[in-house]
Figure 1 (tube, one colour):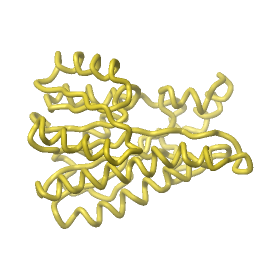
Figure 2 (cartoon, helix red, strand yellow):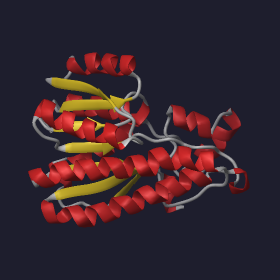
Figure 3 (cartoon, helix red, strand yellow):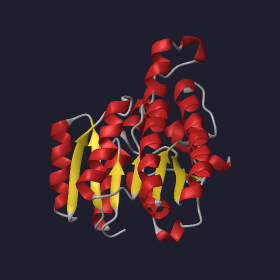
Length: 248
């Protein structure tokens, strides 16, 4: 991955942050994006101690002008875009379907589906001109399974997996691969929202055959693999990183 230009949305915490450091250790040129400028600039300072190039660009993935600027600025700053990791996500309002609202739908689908679609659109336009590139979307075990009380998040991640497969079929014609990584329970702030109590966390982990939550580094390693030359014949694939949860 040396000298590859990598863009990561939602990069300021959790899986996105771990992924930024994983690519930096491979000496890629890393562009991180989010909505908190101070945290973004601080992350860039840390990354520059590891890799030759790092850059922060503020963007809200729900806003097409922001996304268009994000891709254009990345290409202008480093000359191209080799890998895009569409990691920005939102869990939405938890609770039964009967309690969901237009607002809870918009929260989950605005970031997870509209945001992913807008990123895919402008990344593919850039990569089509290059005739090369790799895109990794972030799904979830709930992108192909379900759990009570997670309707908006589950539905939105099912949509992400559908978008991934369609984009992969369309992009194959111009040499671009599109895949998704689907984590199970991983020690992040979002996991804490899904499991706010020790009992709830224990119950969620009990459903994982490996009997533990994953780490952000384990997900970052999977993203790194799918982005590498070792995965050159893999596209349209959903890679579960969930300790066997998808097999149950």
